[in-house]
Image (cartoon, rainbow over all chains, first blue to last red; front, side, top):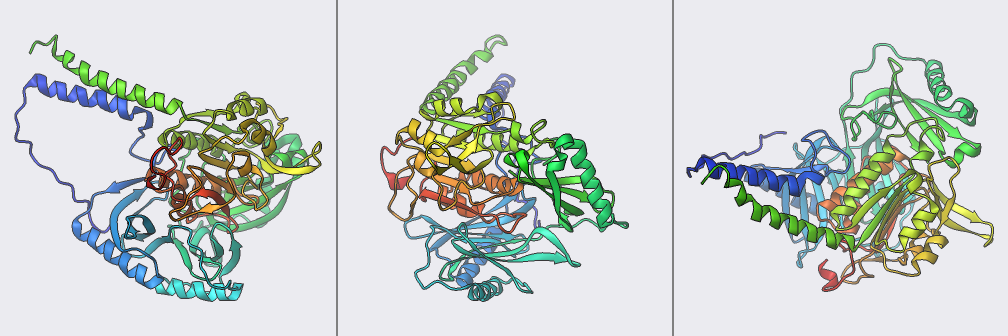
Length: 310
Length: 251
């Protein structure tokens, strides 16, 4: 965070009797127990069932700065809204603090949301209301070019040819520039633009998480496959033959609790270099899981997490 | 004030709080929501891996539906069977399910329906077809329906109809009532579903509409570029339990 929260402390001038202080304390405690016990959670880390964001108090000047950034981005991307409000949020699921700027129309209805890192870079922008564009549909190449224009307009830099795919949830096209570091993909990171079918702007998302240091020694591809197959044999026993390796590659991944319930409910903040070994299921096993991935630390071979498609 | 009696002053506020809460619980009881989660299929002995994502999906969904004013209850293992789900669905206003889903062949009807597998606490899990749910609900109104399975929101899905939700997207000042259906397109990965769901529940808890929450959830950090989901219903609806009784567009 670039500025500390503005915490206001003041002395309470009123003197209270011992019994009334006790009364106030006990009442507050009872009320808290009754009202908040079912949904309470520890301060950190994020726990499933709770909210992942919480407001952070900041000085008015920072709110004004966020509002100005929101107005600038709205102009650049053509996002609607006649007035805006802003607040700083601490997102414990995503491990980041950002300023959220919500724009409303003349009737007070929310029409767009933008989020900015505390350094002012856009994290997310989305036009609300599912307002499909009215123009003729554009093709894949035009979607890529249009998205590049929007990324530049948002003050971000990307390079290389994007991944362009039709997406229902995006409203038409999903165009992404995955982050690659030293030739190795950073899973989930990058810039993604959502366009309506006619090429008008729908949304933008940017993720760039910290990376751990590269291990001094790496498992070979063969060692990684062997380690992953050992896990499969140990866990699936007589069903192990129903799983076959279909892919194996190095990637930066966020360690998770997929195979370890004692780990935090949110993916880790810092990404680690891993061998991602993917297995595909067949036979009866495929009725429960379709594909499964094991993420092995590229240096030690320890299991960092994984994924499953059911 | 004597040391014996000071605590008596707590009685009125505590009683008031209890009454308020009991009234709130009564209101919730009017709008049940079932959260069915298939744990057994994705844990030993059915699947060699112990899957930690599924239980937290259940926890998150139960909490989210409760925040929306439902009497939300989670079911898994032997409590999530085809028979139990079909018995409960008659009264459910909200419904969430996480399981193995597909566009299953129904031999007796000679056609396919969207469906998902029960848990049942063992490795032999029957399919619950959309037609089964539709027959039980018989067109009764639904609120928020979240089908966290593969293929639940494919273009050909038959699941929204089971909950009497038309596959139309209503935005602006029009509405199709306090109903919303969310599901995934094609085959999706658990970690992406978890990211989407956490963002969705969090946006709803921040008073975003069900449609806005979908759009915010879609901007998550997904591990797989092919992640996709879809929705049908009333975009500008709060997601709160129950029918609209006053101003529909105010919600």
